[in-house]
Amino acid sequence: MTGTIFVLNGPNLNLLGKRQPGIYGSETLADVEVATARQAESHGMSTRFLQSNAEHQLIDWIHEARDQAAGIVINPAAYTHTSVAILDALNAFDGPVIEVHISNVHKREEFRHHSFVSLRADGVIAGCGTQGYLLAIDRLAKLLADAN
Image 1 (cartoon, rainbow, N blue to C red):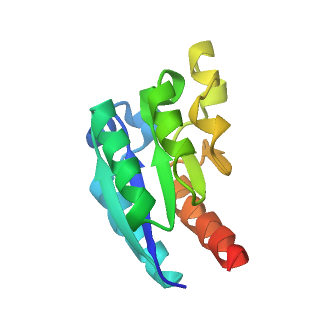
Image 2: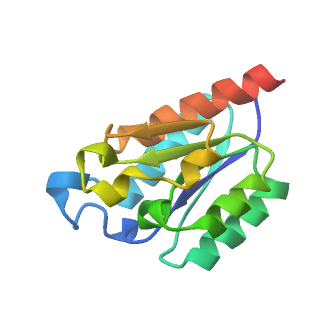
Image 3: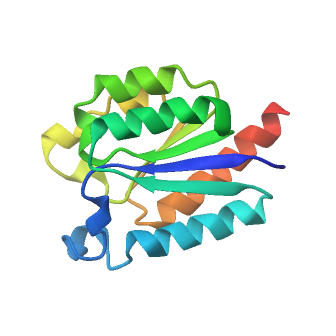
């Protein structure tokens, strides 16, 4: 299989490994980037790994993915619970989308229990730590293989 998977990360994930390690762990976003690239390579694919604190930038990357990506792994972070705009952008993407959350959002504050992104996602992985990204890559590879 060939193709590129966009791995999109929302606000504050640039602080991964430094911010609330009891919730999010000690791995950095750079560590996650290396691991996801290796996982994608094991499926004959590549990744484009991106992070922004700006909602509009995430939307622009989703638009780019329409022409450049076979699938999207997205951890929208706080935008999960607030962004209809990200949902709308994902709805314009034809490939599979997997939503990832490092923590189990259902064991946290009530407002974190709702996800706009889940309305479009082909799968949701939550509470598996940064391993969730690797599981998402595996799932995307399976969905893409089944589609061909």
